[in-house]
Image 1: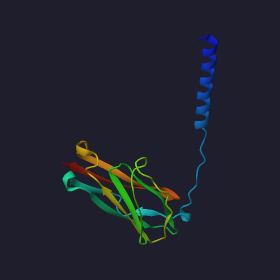
Image 2 (image 1 turned 30 degrees about the vertical axis):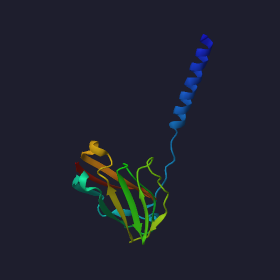
Image 3 (image 1 turned 180 degrees about the vertical axis):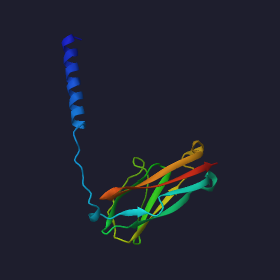
Image 4 (image 1 turned 90 degrees about the horizontal axis):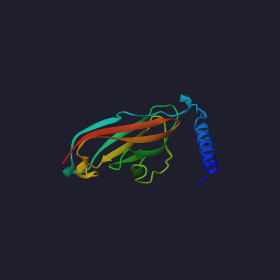
Length: 164
């Protein structure tokens, strides 16, 4: 290979590298959130410890209650889990969405569930201690992320000590 081809290749590579770095380092626009204009969905309990969970006994679940403590509607736009061993189902006003799981393992639908001020929704989280097989014995921690329009995502989490 001639030295001219190597030099041109190096110059093109460096130009692409610097161009990419310049593109990635641009400041991102800030999105202002007006707390008076958004609902505030909160969880009365955002963490639960299942304690000892037997693989032999199968699935365990926990219901988390979410309340809109704001002055306007809060909208749930997406919900997903941190692991394929966990699913979550949202129930509000007699309707259910889910169960949903981990991105990349199951489809994660876009939601538009509007919770008005003072109303409650329930997220039922189900953990399958058998999902990871014998390698899944021990202490685990998992999360459910609930994305909301106009506020930071809400995290529900749990832990368990999985036994055979």
